[in-house]
Length: 501
Image (cartoon, rainbow, N blue to C red; front, top):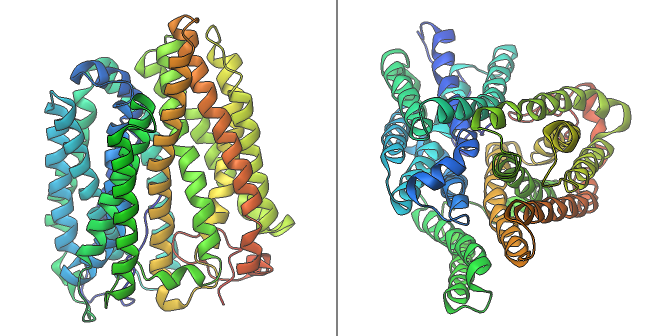
């Protein structure tokens, strides 16, 4: 899934004398591919990573969440930094940090060094994604060429996520889990060298509005979210009344409140809060947060069930994710036609409910099940619904916003998806761990299965709530299907139904 243009200062004219634009696009798309790959490549390796560095079952979620939190919380700051400091410079710095931290993750021998390295990798990703896309927008002015470039961008984002699952299984089973991270480091280093050689400095020639980086906002929102996720994760093993858990929740409330205060007073806020009142931005991001919480949790628990309960190897678990990816692409491809036929709102609700049905089906897994009988059917439904819903939400998230805020709105929906995924995984992990710990009379694999079933049941309920809340989108963007016939979709909004007012 793709990242978004930076919020401010986006250039719209192509620089003069740019040679080999196709090669430059290939390099920039490869940077996004590396980011998407690293989001999913670790999932099937988690049991091996746990054994390799001595992680607890609860600690496995931090291998995912440390990357996702840093990436999501700093994505908007990365876009602003690219505008102010130079897109190529920020891209190069992000690639360097990404490569070094991925190498460090592969060399880690303790849980804390691994989590620290993954956090740094997420920071690098937050610089890479908006800077690379901003360069794509700079290279291709509005028109068919930009549309084709954004199509390439979206395709490599989806391909990176699917390839990460498969490559993670291959590397873990053949070379060992450290190569999951070493491969990311090598890929980022290659893209770094290609950027130095092929991406010209002339792409930096853009008018920059006077503005300041909102470092206080970035610090408060990031630390506040880390405290929240820590509290949710620790509650599963220490109890909700544990002093550390209560302290984490208190710190999260204080820091996130301080973030709102900072954003209201900063002359160039990281997140202008008024954006939520424009068009469908507020409701769309609320629903996207819920969708993200389920999506990340699914890709966390499904490989664990296959490996820890069904006995699949990493490669088999990775291959088993491909039907879900294929169904996701099918849902994305069908979404525009469905929108023209039944409207954006009905397509969105259908996508959410199809996923909910798939998760209810998946919650029937058993300790002695098989991939064909317990997993394949549900994940085909989930993938189909995910593709349908994601297309609609990315369109709704930029529906009705002022043109000057289009980049901000587009970046925000990716931020909320990442943050929702991190918080949702913490909640689902806590609930699953509590259910497993309470099933003392059952064999270990059966107890694990009960935990995973709980996570899938709660996920289905969350999507049901998201379907109800999606009604709020109608108020922000009435009659969205009008634009299906001719409106020019904004970047990262493949849904042609979004109405811009």
